[in-house]
Length: 150
Image (cartoon, rainbow, N blue to C red; front, side, top):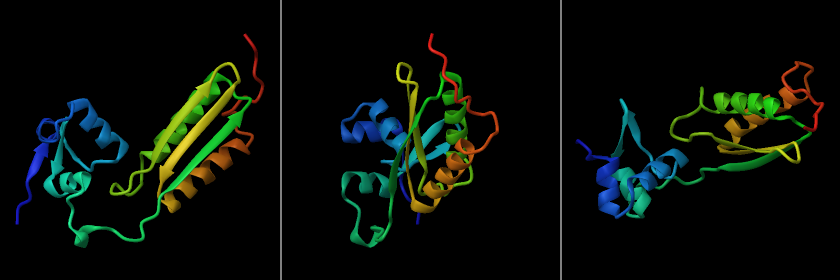
């Protein structure tokens, strides 16, 4: 049985939303989509799940999600950029596509403080936190702990 597939524009039109809003839902993991070339396609069942019209038989029970915020003090901009790139690259590789690991980084220039926000399943989050711990506690030169005020 073939399932209906919709473009981002079709979904936006059906829901009365802006196309950018629908793309934001896809990027945040709120709406599942398949990327074909440069375009996303959304299955009818995934659209139904977003709008709350999914049947009870398709509801997943017992799925857990972990949210973590890691604060790192005393880090300069260059080190924060390197660490952010490492975390994002690790999150975007070798994880379950059905349950994506989402990472966001924020750097406060005045306080020399970095925050890493991680959302995902417990196992993937634990792997990423383990990598972060290894990088922060290793003498590998990735992070220069001396912060120079400008």
